[in-house]
Length: 385
Image 1 (spheres, one colour):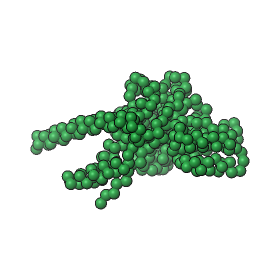
Image 2 (spheres, helix red, strand yellow):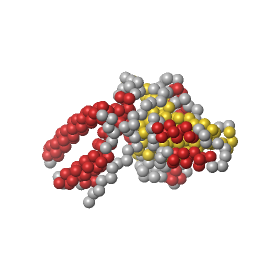
Image 3 (cartoon, helix red, strand yellow):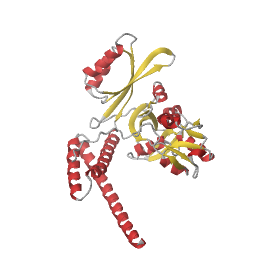
Image 4 (cartoon, helix red, strand yellow):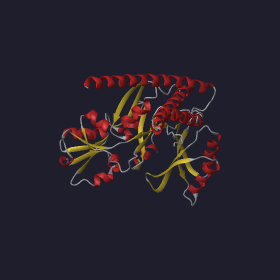
């Protein structure tokens, strides 16, 4: 029986290898597709074609005995990978100086931090050797970029559970950097500790303030357990490694790399927990009109009734969609606020230029933080029986 099982596993391994070869071939062909789209000024994404393709694949998969939802999930992932790679290639073609042979990336924490996972995800689609620069604070990240010690900085800016990360928003008011990219990273919090340690043994749980906020409901249910605040998830992992009465909040992936075991999983207040990161650099980038684009700016409205409403009406009149509006206090100026605005628009669009000119009449000042490729893809809807 053992030999029969080994033979079956060998067959599966061979099929998996063949699948990888085909996926690599598909990606190479998609690179040729983007070259054609660049030459002929075609949009990178064709949602009508995506929908027709998925419907055809689901139908064919069903004829082979495969579940339609399974086929849809697999190929949605493949299509998303293809679109994001094509967008990244288009941006590299437009900004050849953006990525060199080496990309020095500053991010919060070190091995095992969520920022490290996000870093690898974003730069996996971009050329160049990755040099990681772990930092202990957000301001250290921007300082490294400003002084040229890092080519890029990675900053978490909001989370679906805990909301906006105010420290980062406040930092962007004064940091001399431009937003050049974004990504969304799934966050799966676990309680981790040394192998053999149980929940009843835990006296202290270590973590960054953000995971604590995102897991507040779980933490409130822990009896007689102290919280140890750390500057990053990687620091929390080190604390758990050093003490068999300590645990950390981290991902399962990070726990395994650190030699820790998962005690409990799925700790976040919401089951669908994601963090949005921005990528910053010293200089702004040009973004092609062939891909989805976001523009982020700061504006301070005049201290008069209806000033904010007047500013927002200008966006409406120019048919520009706002996807984020965040207010933050101005340091040293009590009761004054600035507004961070995310637009689904390219700074080179005529309507955006017209909007910015009109805003000057109803605001105290405006500062552009960056125009960048949007990596938030909405999956096409496919009807299934």
